[in-house]
Length: 171
Image (cartoon, rainbow, N blue to C red; front, side, top):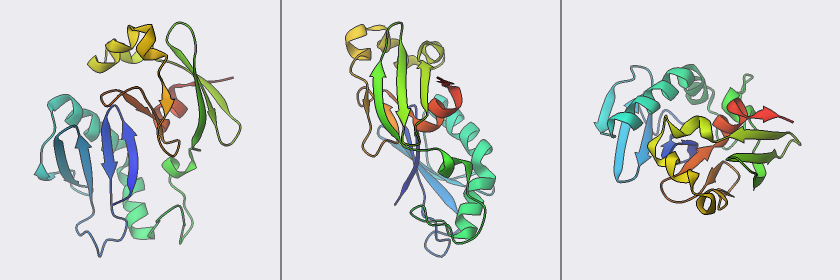
């Protein structure tokens, strides 16, 4: 099942062919928890997540609901578009390099040549695991996730390219 997003430790997966997976829904995984949510109704079909991660997932789903349904009905798969209308998520380029800077800032280079600075401090008071990044040794271990879809520090702390693209400052 293709991974379509990864943010704050939550991995979101989805089949794109509605015949394979009806009704259209996403699978979200966080540590040992897994949940399936109907994209149209945004109702839980199966499973559960911790409250904080569930709220984050629902906010993400609210933001991307139309795009996800378009992906299903347009049969977008493996970055091949059958009809016009590329989702915003697909427009965000993959990352190719990450360099930890001073003061909890990351310098991130994307495949399209754009470089962004992202201040990780903005996440510390919102997401408990990010508090551990105050440890300079841990913060300096930032590395690209396989494929350039996100930045990871350990099994608990990661940040997806969408957040970096949206929250980072272009330099």
